Image (cartoon, rainbow, N blue to C red; front, side, top):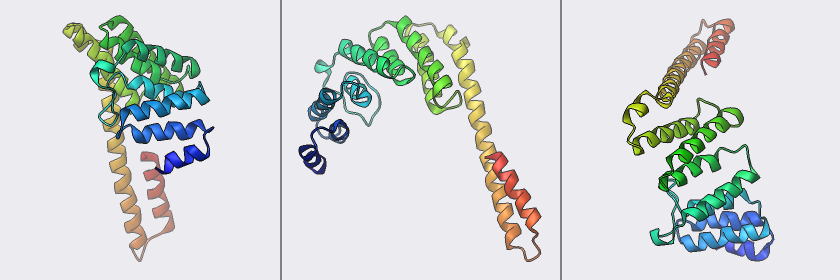
Amino acid sequence: KIMDDLINKFPGYYQLHEWSGDIKNSLDVRQSEKRWEEALEINPDAFGSIMNLSALHYPTGINFQMLIENERDLDKAEKLLLRAQKILPNSSRPSRFLGNVYRAKNDFEKSLASYNKSLELIEKYEEGATSSSYANSLLVAGHVYTFQGKYEEGRNSEYLEMWNNFMNKIEATKCYRIKANMTLKSSSQIADDTDWHIDDQGEALKTAVFYI
């Protein structure tokens, strides 16, 4: 209701329409679609609205509501994602979800190429090769082999190796954070000690920062 009132008051702000669509998605899918389409009428390059309109046609996650099955259109989703790709060519999201669309179309070569493209973009322009988004693209790329029935290739592929490397880095990061937490506690204990020295606490804190 508040967002609808704001849109009536400031109809030319495409962001309000976009945000309203985000809110309405869990309540009324058609109304969310309407709001995102309104955002595009105001700003044809509204990247978020284009991505959300595409996602109405294929699964992206449990928190996003799609259109009912007989209203979904993978061709429309593909066109929207290609449009988003032109607007933000360094974003990994269009490539990542084009992989989903092509996989749903059983075009596994295009699907794998799209997932690979998203990996390149994440590593070069976004969070990097140790991020959760990179791991997610790795995982779905590996799934393509399974859908193709190429189980051995999937098990022995570079994706499995990269996934294992990613998980090893995550485990190492967890260890560093545990060490950092322990070191910070040590520095606190030093501070509580009546005989503590500033140099001792400072060294402990520097070590904690190194681990983080």
